[in-house]
Amino acid sequence: MSYEHIKVWEDGPVTVVALNRPDKGNAISKRMAEEIQAAMTAFAASEQKCAVLTATGTKAFSFGADVTEPPELWRAVPNVGWQCDKPLIAALEGWCIGGALVLAMMADLAVCGAKARLYYPEAKIGLTGGMIAALPSRIPHKVAMELMLLCRVFDAERSERVGLVNEVVPEGEALAKAIEWGKEMAGFAPMVLGGIKRMVLDDILPRGPSEQWALQGQRLAAIRESEDFREGGAAFREKRPPVFKGR
Image (cartoon, rainbow, N blue to C red):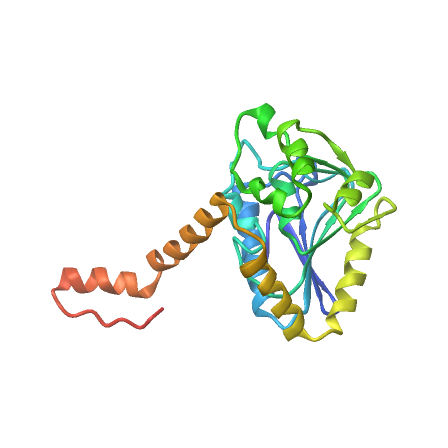
């Protein structure tokens, strides 16, 4: 499958999905969010063992949502826009802003280059999608509130110290480190990795209101787009009993 705003390739058992609008700071457009969702859904159904979410260039992982072409950001968010029990690693270089921070936050592991900067400025802008509210379940409460309410910029070292990322590497080496981790986990028991991840997501980490809304919306959208929905409408118009197939 060809993509316009992302690049996808395989490095052994690891699938790499890279945001690819470097001239726009890898801002997440409507099309990009849809492509991330499609690529990650394909990865989930594949024989690949691990995925890395990254971006081209070192200036920015992403400046966040593209205000000129607003995305349905939930489509790009791990374990919201797509479901997968396989490990997902975020590899960050440069700026990670707004909605892009949500993507990194929701990954299972994260590594960043030494010049990475994490920033959530929505309180200064006057708009939020609300998914960032899950941050206090992933890092200490007061630290999360500082990032969200005071709009502080966290450099790479502090991001590692508070648990936003697992490791800081020299600039430009985040992707290589993430792929290294992915290949390491590819040799582990998939059922154990998947079971642990699913228990954490379903039983340990709480889901915020925006996350729950997006998940319910996705389920309802699947019904609206199903063959059964079309069959029900056709049967009503044709005054006959519907023949549903569960798809």
